Picture (cartoon, rainbow, N blue to C red):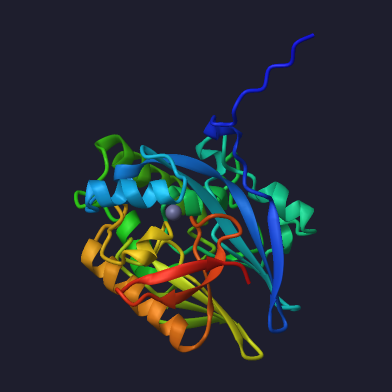
Length: 299
Ligand SMILES: [Zn+2]
């Protein structure tokens, strides 16, 4: 009998690990993988010099044409409160929608979640907020979202012309936001400024990626974690802070927001989390002499 070994180059075989638990002071945090999705490189780095970008990807042993992007949600248990930051993509693709199973494995039932913070209403963050028949997936939760975000996506007309994405991707983003936000309307708790959502967990306006995009700060007993949401979607966006993301609605504002959040994190010695960074999506940054920041994974 002959055994044939195939080199593992088929990216569909890649699956991030499921969950990783750590403490921020007395607060228990668990990063949970909802899955992943593959995007054309040009969507992630629309203004990067092509040669520089290819060299940067090659030095990371990453393919030149596509980015395999993890989706990572954050479960926060304070002892009194159970908070979920972002809900994953739900039924968006066959490689997403693992969040309910991950929660169950962490001992959390949907009805146990009392607060869901939606960093923004893109499909990979809000798709898991409703179940397969369109009901809120977390029946007892209040859903905290920026008021600006709610108004933007539920307005009669949503202008996505500035997204550097194909028309069908824009249309999909818009229709998913509307489909998910509608059923949540009685449970939405809109915020309009930096707000401590529960003790130790603060939502911070971080506009640019979307008009009402939020970052989330977890702080306890002198330790802290800043969840950037999608203020950076790849470690190269930290190393090359001028490189924009095609999903950013207001690119200059998004770049300024990214800088503000990272500088705040460095000044206070915080760890960072980013939804699309390699699992477990947590790490620290250090300033590079030529500008930008180096990402070092881990807690
Ligand atoms: Zn995203």
